[in-house]
Image (cartoon, rainbow, N blue to C red; front, side, top):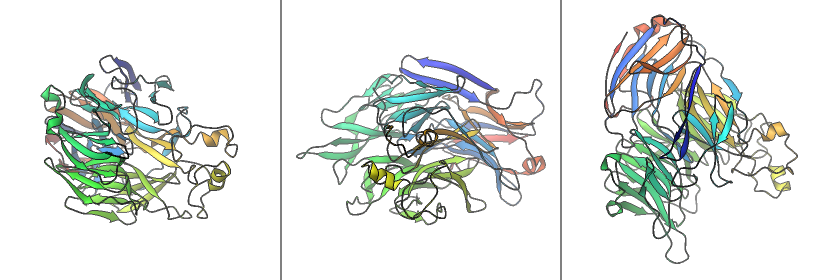
Length: 521
């Protein structure tokens, strides 16, 4: 079953497709749930914070077998929707094999990134200004998306649910519910926005041989203020190199963190910025994704292809072997690019062979979920796929490297997007790829393992009444007694679930910022 509605929000000028995905029909006469967790959750005022975990179920051995929470991730160009609520259940025994299905190609050539809002995904391409296409699951096709009132969406722009409204940033400005709250600067430009913990952050830069600058700015602002951003209250730090830009932002406890493409790591504590790693033009150090994972902030790094962690203080620590690499590929120039939590596990997408890795924390093991491309054969004779063909066509050597650019939980699936090095236009002269092979670039896939449900939280400026149910044949989330999401699922060890211990406010999504009271039936 899928419920689908088309909502054109006039004040936003942005097409919003709201859907609740389910491949499990709702029973005509509801059977009693096998397990029901009821939770009254107070998340406080929404000021862009990382909400965290609502609960976990742990068996007699302490193994996590179910949980729920809200993921906070920023993958390369766009931040994920913080109002996406996930409920997962892990079955005992062998992990089931994932099923992967390709959606129709978005027809944005060799690369797309995913922007998600309201449990709806849009494919973005950088080579066409404003190219944004939204997946319509009812029609089974991609549709062009109207641009927001702030202008075309570029890299580092986006739309973000904040409270009952939508914060939009693009084309050098920001708006809340269609009302402009930040105009373009008198000099230079604003770019790569981020809103968290009551601060609207962005880079402000001006490229010039004389008087050029780049700084990172944090401005206090809340929707409840009712007005525009007051730049006289802004706090900033100068970047070492003019033209610095980030690929991701993150937050840890009460701090905000950004990393420039020159490797400068800047942390804001609500009062002042500090540099914990100096930018350098001698050493490559770039971070492409940040995710809150249990008690730490994870950073996905290039060129190690591994994750780093930040737990406060002055150090970002490399996690060796997080993730591993497939046998038969070069250890050089690897990039951990995308992160997600799905089915209670950590997922990582890695360039240049589009490897998808899954980490099971209880087993403390990494598992390969394969590649998101079927071609070419793996080799360590070259660092990237199709290097000879890139040279033949006078392209950069890594042009045909293979990226996983998006990982978005939606309904029961994890939506995955792919790209070449850049979001390039396709040319018919690239005859070394068949049409089917070239359409694996710039593709969107639905990767699915049983036991995960993502649904759109309906924000209220008051405590939320939620139910998480395992019913015969499906997982269900309800809010205020109304079903907001369901997916097919068959529980194999009901007794284990019913006897498990509930741990409130802790879990894989991080510690809850708020309060929760609940019961288990």
